[in-house]
Amino acid sequence: MALRYGVLRPDGRAQRSVFIVDQAGNVRYIDVHAQSEQPDPEAIFEALAKLS
Image (cartoon, rainbow, N blue to C red; front, side, top):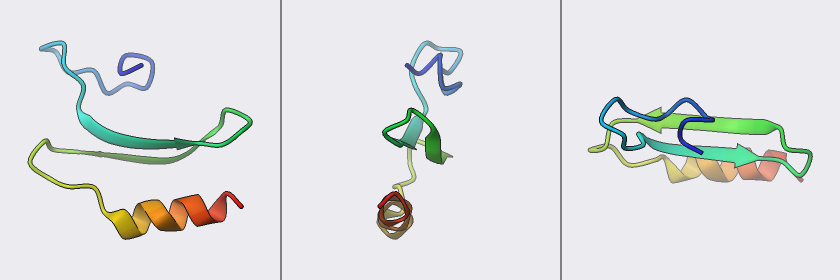
């Protein structure tokens, strides 16, 4: 899946990322960041709330 979503690093590992995909298969939220960073939970919760 990392290759499909464009987050596969040259060393073969995936970048730290969060994808929210709706029931129709559309990507509704993307968050890609450095391994040392944490995803923003509030942004993720907001994106999830928009799905309903």
